[in-house]
Image (cartoon, rainbow, N blue to C red):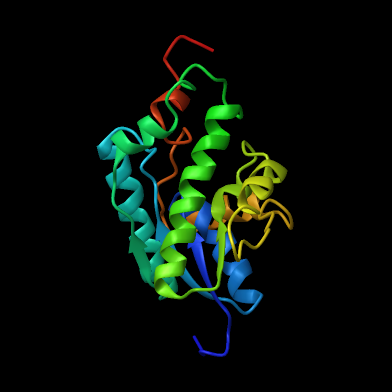
Length: 181
């Protein structure tokens, strides 16, 4: 992209969520770099599958992707005591903070002035909660990627580009146990 476009580091939870989110950022004239920072994802094989598909999307869109270190142990320590929290509860808020803090730190090191996250495209995530947490970090741009049919568009693009779509958020606490609701 032209260097006159503002640079933004996009916390990328997975390729499907990054599809429509990235196209919107590009339409808004941002110079996008993916940041795959997901130490919450469990098991490691799931992390690798999601990373592989994020790389595939980066190749399709001709955008750079930076991979953060995978450190599930550190993430578990970060959310310690919140393991029994329900989905969309305090554990998720703490997880968002973990990922956005890492994104902010990486943006600072790379001299990228803006950050945002693909998390807001999910109908299972509460965008105002993510915005409240994101405001702690300099350069955070509030994008509710659910708007303008973002989630529906992410499904369409994931099918078009044959991207792996997972069936849980990522951490072991969000996995559905067969036979349980």
